[in-house]
Image 1: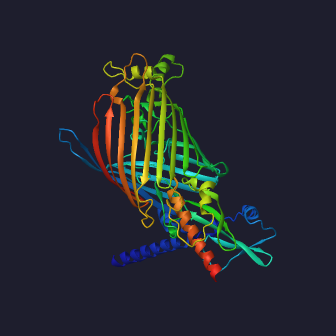
Image 2: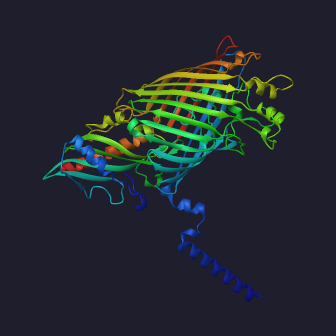
Image 3: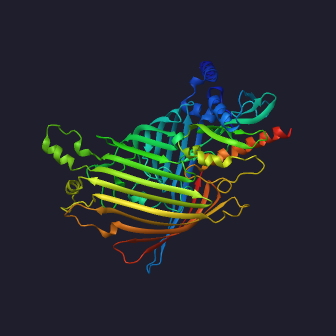
Length: 401
Length: 169
C-alpha cells in the first residue's frame, strides 16, 4: 500500500514538474495577471487621493467637524502594443464605497485620431476630467461641479478623440449612455439636479444614447479654452417590455424622461505665477412638467426645474514665484461661485430659494512637489433663503502619483 | 530618455526635421550624421549632427518621453519600467548648442496635449543647457499639462547636457 502511495506521489511530482517546465518554455501558459506583472514596461500603476477635514464654524450651535478619506483612486493602465491600451481607475470613496471610475480601451491611430470605448468620463468642463486634487485649488471641488455638472460623471460609451496641433485644438466626441431619470422612483430632483441620475456603468439601462463632445484651444501660451456640449434624453425603466403599439402606455412612459441640453464653457490662464480660471454651465431640461407630475410623491409634484446654471471665477498666485531658490509652490487663491438647480421652472411650480447658492472660497495650498498638496481654505456659503453666510473651514492632504 | 523594445521603436520624422533645418539654419545639401556613444544603445533618444560639407552647422535631438493621463502617471522619466503614455519630440540647435526650434510630432497620451502649443515651445529657443529650467518660473506653467511639460523640460535639459559635453570634447 505504501509503495503504491510513493509511486503516486512520484508521478504527481513528475507531472507538476513537467507542467512547470512547459509553462517556462511557453509564456502563453501563464495567466493574464502573471503576464501583466511580468511585463512591467507595459503596465502602469498610479493613483490619487484626498484626506479632508471639514469644520463648520461661526454658529452659536456646536457643530462636529468631519475627518474623511474622501477618495482614494488606484489606476491600472496596460499598453498591449504601441496602438492599443487599456485604462482603468478603481475608486474607494469614504473608505467603504468602491466604484470603477474609468475602464476603457483606447486605439491610437495617430496624434489626430484615437478611438476609445468603455466606461469613460463625460468631457464636460474642467473638473470632470482634471479632478485629481492636486490640480485644483481648494480642499473640495467647486460646488458647481457637484450640483450642475455631477462630477465624477462617467458612463459607458464609444467615440473618438485627438489633437490637431497645427490648429492647437483637441477634440472629443462620444456616443454614451445617459442619466437614469426613473428607476421605479424619481432619480432627478430640484435639490440634487441630475446628480442622482448618474448610472456609472453599473448595470445601467439604455434605450437611447446621448452625445457628449468637447473642443479645447491651447494656441495662446498659458491659455486654455474649452467648450463642452451634452445632448440627449434620460433613460427610464418605464419603457422596458412596453408594447410599441400601446400609445397610452408610451405616453405615460414618455413622462418618465426628460431631454437634456447642457453647455459648458471654461477658460484657464497661467502666467508669471498668476493663475485664473472661469467655468460656466447652462443646462436646459425639457419635458419637466410631465416628469414632475409623473414622479409626484403624495400628490406633490417633483420640483425639477427646466433650466440650471452655475459659474465660478477664480484667481490665484504663487507666493514663491519671485523666490528663485524655492522650487515648491504656495498658491493663494480666491473663488466666487454661484449656481441654481432651479434657474427657471415651468408655470405652476414655484422656485425654491434654497437652491440658489453663492459660495466664496479663499485659501492656500502648499505644493512641496507637484504631486503633493497641503491645502486649507475657508468657505462662505449662502442660499437665497438665508440672510447670512454659513462658514466652513476645510483642510486637506492631496496626493497624486 | 527611456528605452523600448524593438517593436516600439521611435519613428524619426526625417521630412519634418529637414524642413525645420532648412527654415531655421538655411542649410542645404546637408547630411544627418548619427552621433554614436553619447546615448546608451537601448535608449529611444537619438542625436544627429547636421553635416554641411566639412563643418557641423547644428545638432538634432529626437526623443520619446513619458507623459501622463488623468489619475495616474509617472513623473520619473528615468524609470523605464513605468513607461505607459508618451509623446515624441525633436529639437534643433545651432553649431554651439543653442536651441533653435522644438516640435512635438507624435502625441500618444490621453492628457497634456497643450505641450504641443507652438507658443509654449518657443520658450526653449536660446536654451543652451548652461542653466537649469524651473517649471512655472523660467518656463511658464500650462494648465492641464503639468506632467507632460515637466517631463519635456527634464528630457530637454538632459539632452542639452549631452550636446554641451559633445561640444566641450
